[in-house]
Image (cartoon, rainbow, N blue to C red):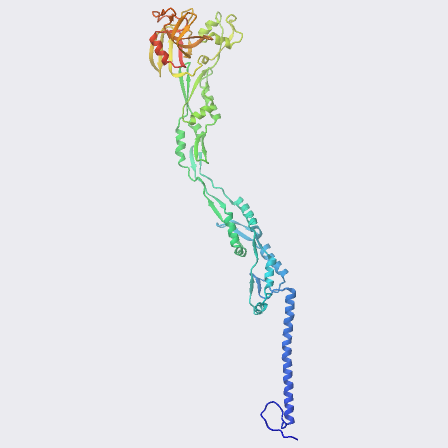
Length: 523
């Protein structure tokens, strides 16, 4: 046998080791193997469980622990569960108060009515993607460590749908501003101030809905932008002066009766003028409207004052009256004498009736078809034309010639004052001058009367004794042989129906007497 030397303890046996030492070492090695085996088993079991968890996590597409969609936990939910939760919470159950600036104003709407839509599927995919990136272990590690991972919802905004909703709201909420107005109240004209309105600013509200989509959805509140709208016309008080000016304006009708030489005047009552004031908001003007029906009513009432024998039928048309008054001018009109009737008495002839009424015979014949100078008889009721038929021209109101047959005198008036007087000669009894109211109708510097072969200087025709045969006023006539007639007869009837003046007076009157000057001839 070989000798075992002592050596430093290296863990290896030597020939000098004893059996006891070897046995002890063997026991130690067996214990070490057992420890290593148990440790390996302890590691293998968690890794297997972890692998099983990973397989289940992937196969079910669960969300990691700690995952939230904003404030809602979605851990361990698969995409379909997440999608259903998001859709129900953000699209179905949520309401948004579209509020105005003033408390209490506004309305509650669903997100969809305001154009909002949360894409639940895309949001669920975002939640599921956490822990499934290219480097998932950091996300998994954070989840295992208990950290929260917040996913924001995927929001879409449909501007067209939101605009449609807002325009419907605006149609109900908008208040049109009221311009200042003028009206007659409590016996006087007053101005009412304008009142502002409101208008939904659709574009500004849309901009807020777009810019603040997430905040609006989370808070359940969005701003409805409402702007005040001022009236275009807020104050019309200066118009009161214009109204008072219109009301103070006299609306006058002057009606002249050339037969009686009478001028009558009527004014529109103040209460009527007040009703005629009209306000035009678009131009802020006040005007007198003067309805034609109102003019007709006034004229009828004034006409009734004249009685049955006269009327205002000689007035301008109602449209012309309206225009004249609106221009601030006075309406001028003629009072017309109505046609009458005459009951023929015993022994009366057409000529005597003509002289009595101052109506040339041919006018009476025209008014009574079938009547002649020979078949007139007592008891006949003759139609007599209006005396105004003898005044075919517009009368000249402030000039008048009055001839007195009995006095053989002419008086000329201007503006109510005597301008001149003249000694005259009228018609002889066999060819008398007809009394009546006539008119200067023609001017002829030197008229010729073929019946008597004489010239009539400065002739002014005043009435037709027969159609085509004009009686008139003129100077002393001159025979074709040069003899001047009736110079010494002035002051006595001498003519064949005309009115004779001396030559100077006739010339003066010829240039003064305008066409239309009334000539009144009395017995």
